[in-house]
Image (tube, rainbow, N blue to C red; front, top):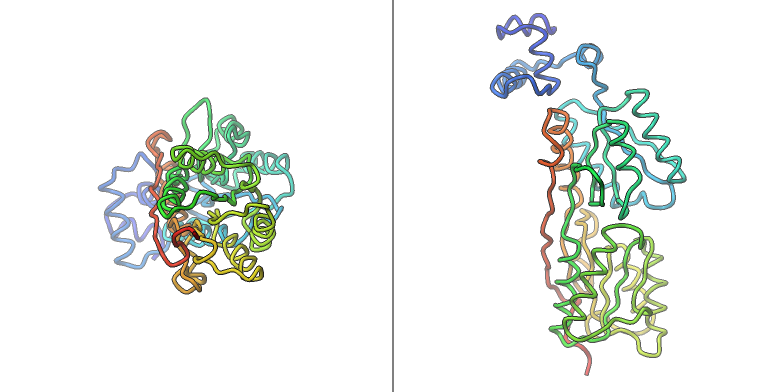
Amino acid sequence: MNLKEFAAHIGLSQTTVSRALGGYPEVRPATRERVLKAAAEFGYQPNISAQRLATGRAGAIGLVFQGDGRFGPHASEFLGGLSGRLQTDGMDILVATVETQEAELAAYRRFAASRRVDAVIVHTPTLRDRRIALLQELDLPFVVHGRSAAARPFAYLDIDNYGAIAAAARHLLDLGHRRIALINGYVENTYARDREQGFRDALEGAGIRPPPTLLAYGAFTDEAGFRTMQRFLALPEPPTAVIAGSMMSALGAMRAVRIAGLSVGRDISLVAHDDVFPYLSPDNLVPTVSTTRSPMRAAGERMADMVLKLLQGTPPEALQEVWPVELVIRRSTERAPE
C-alpha cells in the first residue's frame, strides 16, 4: 500500500504518518509507536525519496576518514554496528575519505552546504578538536566517539580509557612486574592521553616512574607492534611486561617475542586492549591473551541510537556516556621472572 492508503487504514493524516516514520520530535511518542507497530504489522515500507522530500531530511549519516592508515579493522567493526542499527530506521551512511585534516574540515562544510546528511559522527577526537568547533558553527548535528574540550556541550560516547589502562597496569604490578611498557596510540588523541595518564598514575602509585624508552606512540597495526616490541627487547633493561593499546598491536608484539626466542607469559607478560573482533578471539591465541574488553560493534550500535535521538530533539548534554571497561585475565600474564 502507498502512504495515502496506509494513513487512511490507521486513521491518521499522511503528514503525521510521514513525520512519525521520519522521527520528528513533535510527534508524540505514543503516536510514533502506533505508526511503527502498524507499519511492521502490515509490512508497510515508505517510499524513501518521497519521505525525504516530505520531511526535508537526507536520510543519511556522514563519516569522514583520513586516508592515512587509520581506516582498519576497528573502523570496520564500528561501521558494522552503526549501519546495522541505522538500517532499521531506513538511514544510510555516507562515507568520505580524505588525506589531511583540512580536507576533512572541507568535507564537513560540503555536507552542511549540500544537506546530503542529517548528522555526522566524529571519531578519534584530539584534546581540542577543530572539527567539533566547526560542526557547532555549521549547526550540523553530530555525535563524537570519544571526548574533547569544547566551549559548548556536545553528544559523545567514550570508554574509560584511563581506568582500563590503570587496571591493566595494577594487575601487572600485583604480579611483581616493575619494568612495564606501553604501546599507545597517536599522542595527540584524547584517548591516548587518558591511557598514558592511567598508566603513569598506576605506576607512580607503586613508586615507579616509567622511563620514556618504555612508552611508544603510533598506529595500531601488527607491523607497528612488531617493530616497537623489537625496540623494547633491544634495551639494556627490557620490560618484563607490556600493555598493547590494540589487539592488532598485540599480535605484532607477540610475534617479536617469539622471534627473540622468548615466551609470552613466562618471559614477557602481555595485556591487550581488545575491541572484540569476531575473527580474532583472545581465547584462541597461544597463550590466551589478557585483555581490557571494549566491543567496537556495540559502540557503533549505541552511537546510531544516540544520533537518532539527537535528530529527534534530545539535547546534546543528555547524550553523554562513558562506558566502563572490563579486565579479563588469561594466560598471557604471569608473575614477573625472578
